[in-house]
Image (cartoon, rainbow, N blue to C red; front, side, top):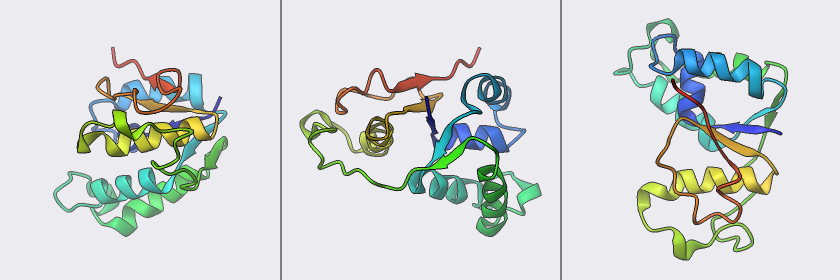
Length: 147
Protein backbone atom coordinates (compact mmCIF):
# COMPACT_ATOMS: atom_id res chain seq x y z
CA UNK A 1 0.00 0.00 0.00
CA UNK A 2 1.23 3.48 -0.86
CA UNK A 3 0.28 6.32 1.48
CA UNK A 4 -0.15 9.84 0.14
CA UNK A 5 0.98 12.05 3.00
CA UNK A 6 -1.07 15.20 3.45
CA UNK A 7 0.48 18.58 4.24
CA UNK A 8 0.09 18.22 8.01
CA UNK A 9 1.78 14.81 8.06
CA UNK A 10 4.76 16.09 6.09
CA UNK A 11 5.05 19.13 8.34
CA UNK A 12 4.94 16.87 11.40
CA UNK A 13 7.74 14.75 9.95
CA UNK A 14 9.87 17.85 9.31
CA UNK A 15 9.20 20.13 12.29
CA UNK A 16 10.30 18.76 15.69
CA UNK A 17 8.15 21.40 17.43
CA UNK A 18 4.97 20.25 15.68
CA UNK A 19 2.26 18.88 17.98
CA UNK A 20 2.10 15.66 15.90
CA UNK A 21 5.87 15.18 15.50
CA UNK A 22 5.98 12.09 17.76
CA UNK A 23 2.85 10.56 16.24
CA UNK A 24 4.23 11.03 12.73
CA UNK A 25 7.58 9.54 13.67
CA UNK A 26 5.91 6.58 15.39
CA UNK A 27 3.59 5.90 12.46
CA UNK A 28 5.85 6.48 9.45
CA UNK A 29 8.53 3.80 10.06
CA UNK A 30 6.00 1.15 11.04
CA UNK A 31 3.43 1.77 8.32
CA UNK A 32 4.47 3.95 5.40
CA UNK A 33 8.23 3.94 5.00
CA UNK A 34 8.22 1.26 2.31
CA UNK A 35 5.83 3.13 0.03
CA UNK A 36 4.79 6.75 0.52
CA UNK A 37 3.85 9.48 -1.89
CA UNK A 38 3.80 13.20 -2.34
CA UNK A 39 2.15 15.25 -5.05
CA UNK A 40 2.37 18.87 -6.24
CA UNK A 41 -0.52 20.06 -4.06
CA UNK A 42 1.06 18.65 -0.89
CA UNK A 43 4.60 19.75 -1.70
CA UNK A 44 3.47 23.28 -2.54
CA UNK A 45 1.43 23.43 0.66
CA UNK A 46 4.41 22.43 2.80
CA UNK A 47 6.62 25.04 1.14
CA UNK A 48 3.91 27.69 1.49
CA UNK A 49 3.30 27.04 5.19
CA UNK A 50 6.82 26.35 6.44
CA UNK A 51 8.30 28.99 4.15
CA UNK A 52 6.14 31.73 5.62
CA UNK A 53 8.23 34.13 7.71
CA UNK A 54 5.58 33.95 10.44
CA UNK A 55 6.03 30.20 10.87
CA UNK A 56 8.46 29.50 13.74
CA UNK A 57 10.84 27.40 11.68
CA UNK A 58 14.29 29.01 12.09
CA UNK A 59 16.46 26.14 10.92
CA UNK A 60 14.92 26.46 7.44
CA UNK A 61 15.50 30.22 7.58
CA UNK A 62 11.74 30.56 7.08
CA UNK A 63 12.19 30.86 3.34
CA UNK A 64 10.47 28.87 0.62
CA UNK A 65 13.84 27.89 -0.86
CA UNK A 66 15.10 26.65 2.53
CA UNK A 67 12.00 24.53 2.99
CA UNK A 68 12.25 23.27 -0.60
CA UNK A 69 15.78 22.00 0.14
CA UNK A 70 14.51 20.10 3.19
CA UNK A 71 11.57 18.69 1.23
CA UNK A 72 13.93 17.67 -1.59
CA UNK A 73 16.02 15.70 0.92
CA UNK A 74 12.91 14.08 2.37
CA UNK A 75 11.85 13.00 -1.12
CA UNK A 76 15.12 11.06 -1.41
CA UNK A 77 14.12 8.80 1.50
CA UNK A 78 13.65 5.25 0.17
CA UNK A 79 10.04 4.33 -0.54
CA UNK A 80 9.06 7.74 -1.87
CA UNK A 81 7.03 7.98 -5.07
CA UNK A 82 5.78 11.13 -6.71
CA UNK A 83 2.20 11.21 -7.91
CA UNK A 84 1.57 13.89 -10.52
CA UNK A 85 -1.77 15.67 -10.54
CA UNK A 86 -3.30 13.01 -12.77
CA UNK A 87 -6.93 13.16 -11.70
CA UNK A 88 -9.56 15.87 -11.88
CA UNK A 89 -12.46 16.64 -9.61
CA UNK A 90 -14.48 16.42 -12.84
CA UNK A 91 -13.59 12.73 -13.28
CA UNK A 92 -16.95 11.24 -12.34
CA UNK A 93 -15.47 7.75 -12.13
CA UNK A 94 -13.67 8.94 -8.98
CA UNK A 95 -15.53 12.03 -7.69
CA UNK A 96 -19.22 12.75 -7.22
CA UNK A 97 -19.26 16.57 -7.27
CA UNK A 98 -22.86 16.64 -6.05
CA UNK A 99 -21.54 15.43 -2.68
CA UNK A 100 -18.91 18.17 -2.43
CA UNK A 101 -20.81 20.55 -0.17
CA UNK A 102 -18.29 23.13 1.10
CA UNK A 103 -15.34 24.93 -0.44
CA UNK A 104 -13.21 23.88 2.54
CA UNK A 105 -13.56 20.24 1.37
CA UNK A 106 -12.04 20.80 -2.08
CA UNK A 107 -8.36 20.12 -1.35
CA UNK A 108 -8.98 17.12 0.91
CA UNK A 109 -11.42 15.68 -1.63
CA UNK A 110 -8.85 16.12 -4.37
CA UNK A 111 -6.09 14.43 -2.35
CA UNK A 112 -8.40 11.55 -1.44
CA UNK A 113 -9.39 11.20 -5.10
CA UNK A 114 -5.72 11.16 -6.11
CA UNK A 115 -5.06 8.39 -3.59
CA UNK A 116 -7.99 6.34 -4.94
CA UNK A 117 -6.89 6.99 -8.53
CA UNK A 118 -3.42 5.63 -7.70
CA UNK A 119 -4.69 2.68 -5.65
CA UNK A 120 -3.33 4.11 -2.40
CA UNK A 121 -4.53 5.76 0.78
CA UNK A 122 -4.48 9.34 2.02
CA UNK A 123 -2.62 9.49 5.34
CA UNK A 124 -3.74 12.30 7.62
CA UNK A 125 -4.31 13.39 11.20
CA UNK A 126 -7.51 15.19 10.15
CA UNK A 127 -10.55 13.47 11.62
CA UNK A 128 -12.92 15.86 9.82
CA UNK A 129 -12.26 14.82 6.22
CA UNK A 130 -15.50 14.16 4.38
CA UNK A 131 -15.16 11.06 2.22
CA UNK A 132 -18.61 11.01 0.59
CA UNK A 133 -17.59 12.82 -2.60
CA UNK A 134 -14.92 10.25 -3.51
CA UNK A 135 -15.95 6.81 -4.72
CA UNK A 136 -14.17 4.42 -2.35
CA UNK A 137 -13.13 7.38 -0.23
CA UNK A 138 -13.83 5.82 3.16
CA UNK A 139 -11.62 2.82 2.39
CA UNK A 140 -8.85 5.08 1.07
CA UNK A 141 -8.63 7.31 4.15
CA UNK A 142 -5.99 6.37 6.71
CA UNK A 143 -6.20 8.26 10.00
CA UNK A 144 -2.89 8.36 11.84
CA UNK A 145 -3.35 7.84 15.58
CA UNK A 146 -2.32 10.80 17.71
CA UNK A 147 -2.65 9.30 21.18
